[in-house]
Length: 301
Ligand SMILES: NC(=O)c1ccc[n+]([C@@H]2O[C@H](COP(=O)([O-])OP(=O)(O)OC[C@H]3O[C@@H](n4cnc5c(N)ncnc54)[C@H](O)[C@@H]3O)[C@@H](O)[C@H]2O)c1
Image (tube, rainbow, N blue to C red; front, side, top):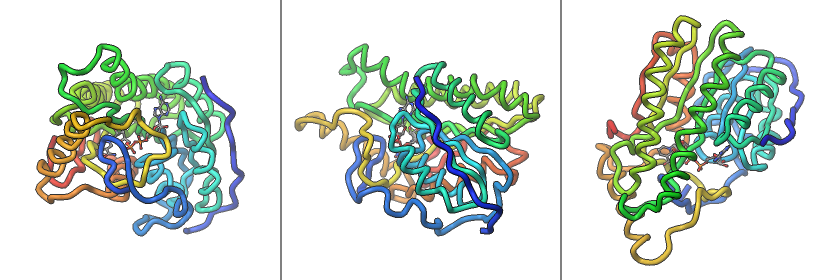
């Protein structure tokens, strides 16, 4: 189901977490800095372009929305949480493009279709679709996952990208081309999250296989594979927090393995994830398609 589209009229052209990892978040409050100019931007890089960003209410999606709005795109921010409208309001005056937001459940094809219909209606053109929804819900050895939990993990971390790519293709083809950037994970080789790893392996396969078909339509399909990323406390929880010593230990194993797998010995930042996503989305990456770029401090996934 999708909610009302909120559009914010823009002016004319201007130049212008404690470690959350892939589990529960903890740390600084979210929100105060969203309208601020990010430290690194390429002004006008997306001027005149229309960009859809999913999962934009918080975390990596929100950081991407912040950067792309500052780089002068018109954006449609999509999320299941109403919080996405707050993010859009905070970005209303930062760049040259218009800012819109819509709620939709991207675990359904209906939600993805409604999001793309809103994009076609609200944006001057639809040039870039960034599929960012996903995230581990539970942390445990595979034999401890209940069948319904496995089902939910796949729905959370594979289907939103699968449905959005399906819904985006006709719109991009009609527009004469474009770019799809999927957000995967290096946790395809991660402990205590086999269903999530399988989902993101699916995202990688979707990216390379769709790129083969999409090239003739002037469409690039690429992905980043983030590693553990520092973020403020999540306002929209992914699921229940780990409870009890055993679940805490299973979650801790994820965090330890995430850091140990890097060569840099640390988590990344939201900015360090947003930068490569924006690069792949931009014309600077015009000869890159079908690739999955690890962004994980040296962990290749
Ligand atoms: N944070 C990390 O350390 C990390 C590491 C590797 C990969 N990733 C990937 O990066 C992406 C973003 O991660 P994050 O930590 O910023 O995510 P997050 O959990 O903080 O935020 C995800 C957003 O997606 C929205 N969402 C969830 N299900 C939805 C649905 N069905 N329809 C619409 N919106 C929905 C949520 O409301 C939320 O705003 C995910 O795909 C995740 O798997 C994250």
